[in-house]
Length: 210
Ligand code: MD3
Ligand code: FE
Image (cartoon, rainbow, N blue to C red):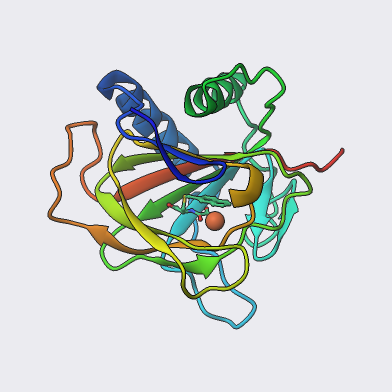
C-alpha cells in the first residue's frame, strides 16, 4: 500500500521484506565500524547531536558535505555502493509508481537512534539538487514529524515509521521541515539483527560535481 502524506511525499509501509532489512542491518554495521567509525556530529553551537551518523559517498558535517571525514580523522568517506543506488531507484519507482532511471543517489546518511535520541525540526538544504530523498527505517519505530516548507511549527503531521518502511520526499515536499521527536520503544520490532534502537538510511543526490 502507498500513502501520500503531502504532494511528493509518499509513505510505503513495510516496503522492505525481512531479508532485505537483515541485509541492510549487516551493511550498516559494517559501515559504522569502518575507519574512525560512526559519530555524533557537533553543531556550530557546540552541542552534540543525540543521533549518531555514518556517511557514504559524501561526509556530512553541520552544514556542508566533504569527501573526507573532516570532523574525525580526515580519512576518505566510505564509497557509495552501486547496489544502494539500484535500491534507491527501485524505491523511487515504487513510491511514485513510475520508472526512475534518472535517479542517481551519491550520498547516504545512516542515522542510529537509541534511548532518548531525537532529531529536531530542520530542512535538508545542503544538497545542490532537488531530486527526491529516499528514507528507509529499520528496527524500533519512531514518530516522524513532517512539517511544511515555511516554518518549524504548525502545520505538521506526525507519522509512525516502523521497520521496513519507505518514505520518498520529492517535489514540493523536498525542502519541508521535518524531524524525529521520539522513538516508539513499545512497538513490536521484527528480528532483523538489531539488538535495540533504530536505523534510518536516507539516500540523496548531492548535486555536487567532482
Ligand atoms: C523530508 N533523518 O537525516 S528521515 C536526516 O529518520 C533526517 O533519521 C530523519 O531527517 C531520520 O536529515 C528523517 C525522513 C526525511 C529525510 C530527509 C528529508 C524526510 C525528509 C528531506 C526532505 C524532506
Ligand atoms: Fe533531514
